[in-house]
Length: 163
Image (cartoon, rainbow, N blue to C red):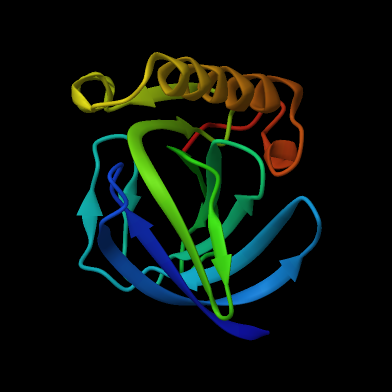
């Protein structure tokens, strides 16, 4: 796998955070990166992120979101998918950058969805077209999860206990 730097930018395009991963797949539709969570443990209320958790991250070339599959670093058990609403990413040699629009969707392993950071999204200085496109991206993620389309094809059938 090829080393890759992932850059999270704010809605104005300013770099906020970067981390290293490994490019594991690239095609016309997306680039997929695998990265280890290297930050201090975080309890987000709906999921706990721990140092060493494994993230598989899809950056779609023409979609207004990216999807991070989160697995426990030890047991490899699926914790869920964190979906960032972003402008389409930019790609360069050895890097991927995405401008975060604050709005997020978390998809639980059982398929339930939770929309996050609505207040932060509303406060952004965006055009009406960007707002509509971002809201449409939330609906697209929810529909992909409902239909269990990749990468949500691991959603449980409902007979297993949710995490």
